[in-house]
Length: 301
Ligand code: ASP
Image 1 (tube, helix red, strand yellow):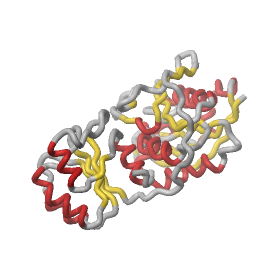
Image 2 (spheres, protein in one colour; image 1 turned 60 degrees about the horizontal axis):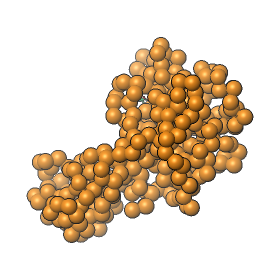
Image 3 (cartoon, protein in one colour; image 1 turned 30 degrees about the vertical axis):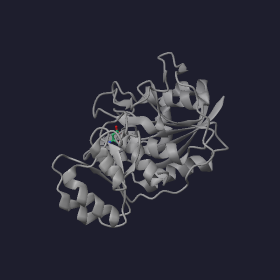
Image 4 (cartoon, protein in one colour; image 1 turned 60 degrees about the vertical axis):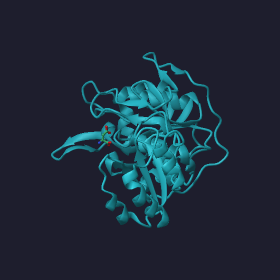
């Protein structure tokens, strides 16, 4: 019998209707009441860490989640984090970096409908997440709608349907069948040797649009780190060249990522990409937006 820790943080999975709309109200123990089948394969302790809509979570809250896992890393076989779906991809990416060296499973899950609501996906997702955590494979993953997604590739692509997540640029790691069996389709990677234990949340993400006003960049001079989400394989438009160069000269570290969720940067391919390279912008390679933010916050690039 595996021993798991459920870390409850709020989200739709824990929501109840209030006069102001859905708001998180259930703690971890109440969530577990809906999935008595867990007792067949694991015991679960609960830590009610926070009770927030994930819209309200900050880097400090995500760091607290990583620290809660670390604190009890030796006591449990695996960890499940019940989380709002809206920013679950940001948390998954950040924990993927912060817990890269942990030799235990850390499984994020949530649901599109509250626990207890008719047709809710919550019981299945919580049960599946516990099955994956009890399976023992190390790493930070998300388990939603039967899919097992590696933490740094999670993308929420739909705001209402039950099947709302995908794995960007790589296939899902595996799946949990309707019979409850965990299947891995991708070989396990060994845990990293080390992981960052602090982060700097002062990272600004700017999505380039075809007509972004170049004068806007002057307001950012000296800001620590700026990620420009550029088009396709990456590049700086000619009309922004002087503005971005001045930003870099002001001491700001400027990173480049793509608005495409898969495929990544090929800065050397086009002249517009070489323009970015020559002015000292740093390519973030092939990353989702959430992973780009996480890697820069953790100082890994
Ligand atoms: N707004 C909710 C949250 O992210 C949505 C959800 O959990 O599905 O907490």
